Amino acid sequence: MDYDEQLDRALENKPDTAGEETRFDVPEPRVRPEGHVTVYENFQATVDRLGREEDHVLKFLQDELGTSAQIDERGRARLKGEFNRRRIQNVLDEYVETYVLCPECGLPDTKLTTEQGVERIACDACGARSSV
Image 1 (tube, one colour):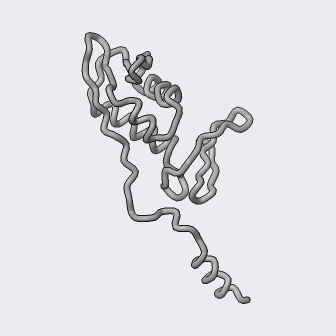
Image 2 (cartoon, rainbow, N blue to C red):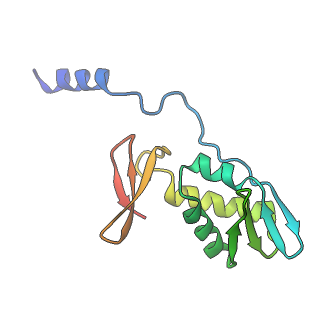
Image 3 (cartoon, rainbow, N blue to C red):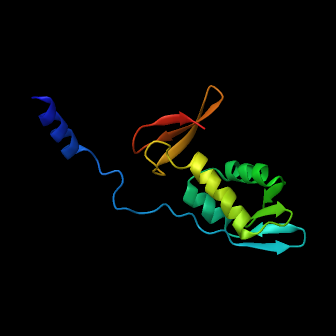
């Protein structure tokens, strides 16, 4: 079998990893002030959609916003200070770009792993592995 035949065969048998052209949508943050705290109402829905540990996402939010935070008994994030929806959305977009989307193929079919103390992102769609 020559190269062209092998290539045709491989392309016919490759899985359709992208499927339809669907965008990866993260729920828009619903936030409200409560005294000197910003309550992120749909934090749990966001974490579920991202497929990441809530502590990892919360730590990223804390670091980027320069604040402290906790998760209450209802799964909401309570951020110390006043932050508007746009600011939190920008931080979430940065998180998605860094920790969710594959840097090679751009798909969200990834997992975070730690190897020898280095955090890595592994893509199930294309097989790429890179440090974050």
